[in-house]
Image 1 (spheres, rainbow, N blue to C red):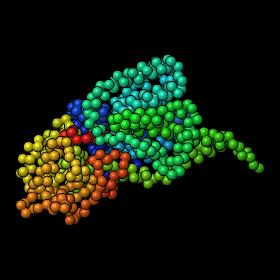
Image 2: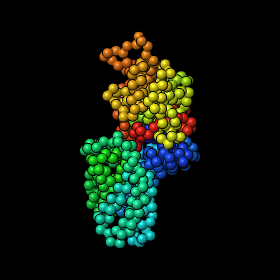
Image 3: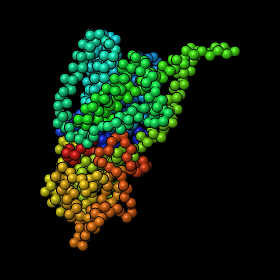
Image 4: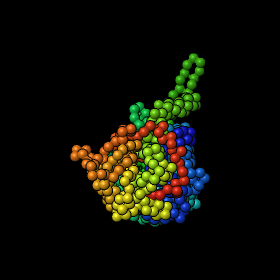
Length: 546
């Protein structure tokens, strides 16, 4: 798992959510604390943790190293669960299954909290089994502590308590065990209530989520498999069904696999809250069940004896051979799905590559040029890679993000913005593709003012597109400039660089491939990296990364 996590870790560009971690974690602790009062409280503990990590060295690789280490720990904990519940061979296979699953590698290389949450849940599950066996009040303290810290990293991890309750019910534990678990779970919920109360006031952050349907269920099942399709996928489902016959392991793995996603999808029918990454920790249940199924099959084959002239082979020899065969099968599975793993290590696989946007701005903009971000969340490119925007003027920015206690700064009022734009004859616009759709009507009056002034007073001179982000040079319209009746003046590509049509909703998922430039174009990331606190930022009114 460590090798898979380190492979291709420096992919040459951060995407939006990672850039938020990068720039927030480099603020001072008082500035982070102020931010959490208005936005991203759910990630507060993670930001404080990453503040200490990035204090060592602010860079993309260091940003992702905690996730790599967490995924490595999770693979070991999944193996330990398999050993405790079904024996060493099942434990070995379960840990390897977890490591070679593409979804694991994806989030092992992301500068967000989800891999750490998965490690916390796996550790808490192992501590649950130890507490059940110990049957003492003291044994529940480590369990409660780990669950509490995990839930503070991301509050939706609290659903693991429901999975653990189902596990205790299936194991038919005595009343004293229920009592110890109830005290620990109650303490966790009480500790989490203030965070839930604050985050409820910030629920607009997840307003971009949609109601999940059966297509999301199918997608999640495929993501939980070591292979998204073909023989590997269907074989995994079959082995998972066989693994249900290992009752003790199934009592732990099945609730972990089904309960958190099931509850979150059900609640999301009323209030959308579901995303695959929020239940990454449930993947451990799938790996355990598949390994248990393989263990039962190998156990049946291990009882077969083969006799011949030169002797008899059976029992221990066959079981050893089957153990090695299982490891080889998983290795072949990993090699077979190398294209999938390579794709996850490509910057183009993420929703956006801010390094490419900043490099494009660096090449096209002249010192002193005014720049306008539409919507203001586009300023993340300047925050993550400020070198590309260092010599230009952010014409809408009134107060930087750290000073304003927002994710990407506070912008001027509509009146102030009109006055500022009236003083320039040219302005570069960095825009999300959806923001230039004539049907888009932003609720923020500042964003409406940007679009109105650009349409009324400017015309497009040139355009460049990268990763769903459009860079346009607008020049002031003269009396002779008349927009074409059948083609809006805002859709003029540059002569030297053709426009690329990249579909975008503005809220692309972290685990959906997104069109863009080849990964080689992201090589400017290191060259554009700089201290994030030297650049201005924007308002928390547009959907921040989740």
